[in-house]
Structures are given as structure tokens and as C-alpha cells.
Amino acid sequence: MERNTRQRSAIRDAIAQADRPLLPQEVLDAAQKEVPGLGIATVYRNLKVLVEEGELQAVNLPGENPRFELVGHQHHHHFQCRQCQRVFDVHACPGDLSRLAPQGFTVEDHDLTLYGRCSDCGPPTRPARRVAAKSAAAHGHTHRHRG
Image (cartoon, rainbow, N blue to C red; front, top):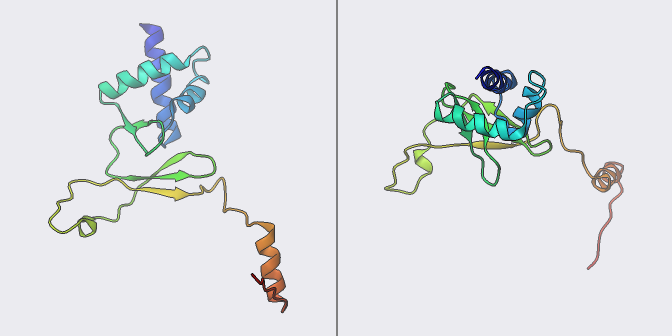
């Protein structure tokens, strides 16, 4: 059981140190620094056990594989970077969203995911054509398309 405990500890530590929800492959990559022989099947098996034991929870985004984070966070939401696909915790909430529900409906819970680019990926680059067109317009050049 020593090995299993070491593997499980490495998996738990990887998620805690990341401070964001991780995909199983991300867990494997991080945990292998502590346990080099760790395999993906062992990661999946231990993630399942840690969820069942109430130490981890799955973060499910539409169309995505589940990511895992430590249990115990207060109510929070998530941000997914469209460039690198990483998911980050958002420790803010717009509050009561019941006003958005149809009349007569009762909101019992909500989950909000923001999408964009993380600070590592930076803002999207503009296509060269648009920049050239804006530059021409700034210098008094305009182009009209006839159709």
C-alpha cells in the first residue's frame, strides 16, 4: 500500500499546487515529477477514489472531459482559455440569477463559465488585412466594394 499512498499523494499534491482544475493528463504530467513511473490508468483510478472519498470534485464543462479540483472551495465559477484550453477558478459570482429564468420558474443553482484568453496566452492577434484597412482609413484612404 506504500506505493499506492505515494501515488495518491502525488496526484492530490499536483491538483493542490496547480490551484486550478486539471485534466487527468495534466495531473499525470505534474504528478510524474514526484512519482516518475506513474501511469495514466493509475491516475484515473485514483481520481475516482479521491472523488468517492470526497477529497476531489469533477468540473464538467460542456463538450469537455472532466477536470478535477480539490473539494472545499466556496461557491465559484470557471474561466476557460480558448487558446490553451486550460480552466481557471473565478472567485466571483454575479449572485442571484433568478431574474433570468422564465416567469414562474425557480432557480435552484447555477454554474457560469467565462471564455476568452488567459494572461499567458494574451489578447488575440488581429488579421493583417483588418489592420491594413484601419491604417489606410486613418490616413484618409477608403475603399469601396461594388457588388
